[in-house]
Image 1 (tube, helix red, strand yellow):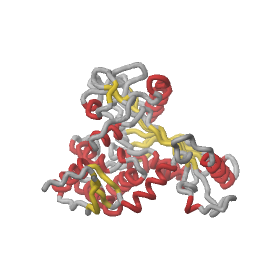
Image 2 (cartoon, rainbow, N blue to C red; image 1 turned 60 degrees about the vertical axis):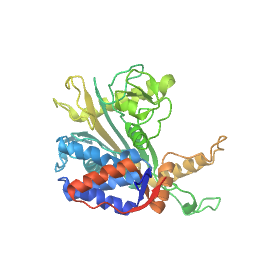
Image 3 (cartoon, one colour; image 1 turned 135 degrees about the vertical axis):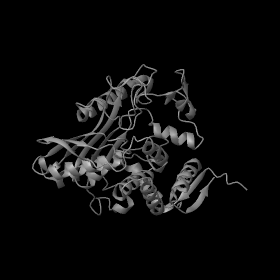
Image 4 (cartoon, rainbow, N blue to C red; image 1 turned 120 degrees about the vertical axis):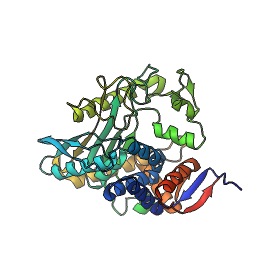
Length: 386
């Protein structure tokens, strides 16, 4: 009998080497493949399936079309003072951004802050991963990646019904500290998320394209107020977006000008890294039919050392105290508890490390198709979810 279960459960420790081996089979150096695989599976663990292994078929196609150069090696293109331009040589965006963070970290001492602009970076994946890493190293980090121009991406400007923007996300990571016990005597192990960086990570559309893709692959509707169909009519059918629809800016009909402003700024800040390029890489967005003259795109990382402003331990302890106070706010009716940014990811990682990662059957089948074509063995399915 055919297996009609909509989800397949697998272990993260099996999924990560599988993803690595797939990328190696597609011509990626092992170190690059390991970084991309780590990033994708960690996105699944954090609950962001939209940026997890479901992206592998997309990346495989980008390699086939020579949009991604899997063997490219990021390098410093230019630098001045506390500013650096990193050229990703069109390899995977995850590899470029990880390298940019390494560059920024290596130059941070004595400067207090470093700004790295990236060119030829491709799709960076879940940008919260980079600021999370920085936060765990005791640093404050801001990352944004964006693209804008006629026909770019799948998002419309506020008040518009035509493609002009990608989802242009922003992420901010802030380090905290976690003493073993707080004044109430509650141990750290009983407070999921405490001690992890405060992690703000959001698209500048109501939902990112990847979550529309997850809804489509899971045969579920998207929430109301997120997308328009090809005629500019609101819809909840995920496929309508891929049939020429649009993503709406964060804030919707009432405050969408705010999401639009953040998205526009993201693309223009990213363009710092592509000054002088006649055809800037659009960080994962498809090239516009009309050319690049009216486009802006790129990614920017800002890394800050709290020690440049005072005692870094005192700063992290203050972040922890304020975070605890936020969690103590009385929850609204129908809400279990107040969370701070980053708590949902911490909770998801704890649950998925224990129980496994659930993938839509369509994603599993797509991975199996690539695995069969490349001779890579599929990871073991530990269960099925109906």
